[in-house]
Every structure is written in C-alpha cells, then in structure tokens.
Image (cartoon, rainbow, N blue to C red; front, side, top):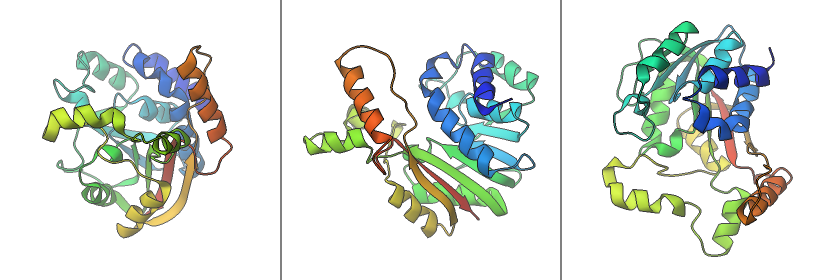
Length: 250
C-alpha cells in the first residue's frame, strides 16, 4: 500500500468525522511521506494532538505502531470536539488504534516512545518552551521529535504585510473576545525560529525544511485565482511555503 493509498483509506474509514478535514489531504500526505522516509516501522510513535487520528490511522495501515493523545477532541464545547465520540472509539478499536484523552502539558505519559510527532500544535501553545520540554520528556534517549507548524513568513503573508495587513489578522477577534479561553494560534513561526527553539531545548536537529503543502485547486472566483497564484509561486521561491517541518533527535 502506498502512502497516498493509506491516507485515502484513513479518510474513508474515519468518515464522516474526517469529511470536513479533506482540504488538508495534501498537507497530511507531506507529513506521511516525511515520516515514512525517516522513521522505520520498528519505532513506537506517539502523536501529540492527533485530532480524530487521520495521520495516526494512515501510519497504522502502513504497519507502524502508533498511539495518539488529544485534549480538545474530548472537551465538550470545544470547536475540535466530536459529538459522537463513542462511534469514533469503535472505529479506532476496529483498527487497533489507541487514542486517549491526554494533555501532554499536564498529564503523565506512562511510557517513553521512540518518536513523538506534533503537527499543527505548537502554534496553539501559550508556553512553547514547556511544550517542547514535555515532548522531549516523552521520548527515549536517541529518539526523534517531529514538529510541523504553519510558516508565518509564507508568500501570501509576505504580501499581506507589504500592504499593511497583519499575517495573523484572522485570529484577532477570537483572541480579543475569548481571552484566556482562546484556543487558536497564539504564535506562528519562521523556520529559523523553530530551529532556535529546538536548539534551546537541547535537541539535535536532523532535518529542517520549508515546504508548500497546499496545492492549487480548481475552484473559480477571484479569491481562488490569487490563492492559486501564490501557491504556485510558493513551490518555486525558497522559504515561501506554507509549512515548516523539523525533525530533531534527543
């Protein structure tokens, strides 16, 4: 089974819970390709902030040993919560996928893993130093930590800033109204900032790269046209992609 086939199967198995996340398919495929390149199937993997388990299930279908933990998936009233969580648990159980209600910042991790993966999570953290320390504590000596996060300096954000717009303006109203209950992006990072924080945490950087994960689509309309243009250009211009990836070793 190829990576793309495994990911498609994962979306299908987790439907209808996965339906509203199909727009992230190419982004998830980038992570899947990266992880299967650098991590062998003998590794035990923990997916911190795994959501409904799309990537974790795809890895499981490929023969990896994966567990996941998520906080907001199980939190009533959260925008990430699932109403029929028992139905979702049934799917996980059928495919021998263990996903638990776990906040890596406050809950004890009962074992150390060969690898920890954290995708689109660090940007939600008020305290990234503590977050990285917790990831580091949950991995074995010599183990790996994979972090993926939006690139605040992607090409479209550069254009927004050039015209006096904030790269993170879409989060301002939530931030302003929700205060301490805000669960959106507290801070997005450049690749160099992600490298710096990893080094400050005592991690050895194996690979750090910027990628354009979202591909142009066939939708019509003015917004789709300029979004497609920026996505195409981001495949060409170094450092202009929408996602930063880093693999570190403890």
